[in-house]
Image 1 (cartoon, rainbow, N blue to C red):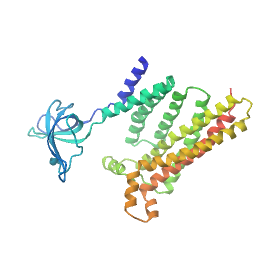
Image 2: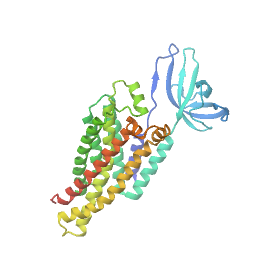
Image 3: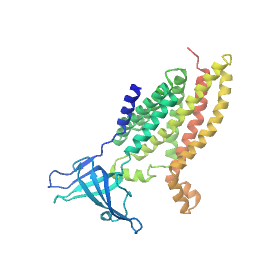
Image 4: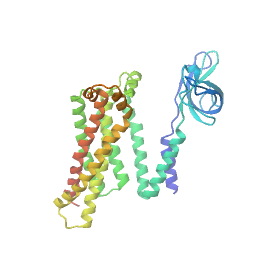
Length: 359
């Protein structure tokens, strides 16, 4: 239990982010602008029925240069309705500015969701430990390793214009290490790792080919547009390729481990089965698994982009024009590449587990 407590604290620390401070000067010679957390002390005035609605609230700053100061925030000063409707006691994210005259202005830019994040992480950790026991501890360590690689290596590499190969290798490292941490250093994990490697190569090649023939640029989402404005040198096509590979590798991990463990259980139940018989029986399971997971994959991609699909539908444009648009084609390529990756990984994993000789 002591180790679990230490591990829980370590993982939570990975999610603890410090809000950046953008100081363009010191003292009162130049304006100072920073982002800070705050707590709503009270609602002074509001009319949420008015068009546009407004709120006037007092907020205590919880960190940064203006810590412990109580600032009055009027949403009407932003020229529109409040970004977040708040009540006394709510935690928020503030943009605070002090001008050269020493006047301090603040605006609520978002809700502070860190407490919700901690609760969800705590539930995830407790659930993993209760269901998986010691193995659940491996799941948590694997999750922590994934977060570390993503935010410590892959994202900085992409932000600095890193190569596609490095990002994909980092993603592959996440999956392979997580397999051994989650399932132990055994034959199933070894076979799964080999199968994932094969599937990952196929996904990387397919994503490159399909993105190329579809003439996708990576500017298919609002986020990509913002990134291009903030970082003019960003390689959006590389980001698109890495995103496709990351999305597919999780599903490859799932089917590879399932197929390899199925073969091991069949072998344990009947040691006299030949490799060919093992392959045939395990593939029957794989066919059922594929039918479910491919459907799940499609629904996951559609669900993640549902507002975009609804918007395109309401425009009442020609269906083929909508389907061939950059936004929709990105999701189609993700789905097709992920599906083909699964279709290739299942027989690869089953064959490796069935025909690879035991030492």
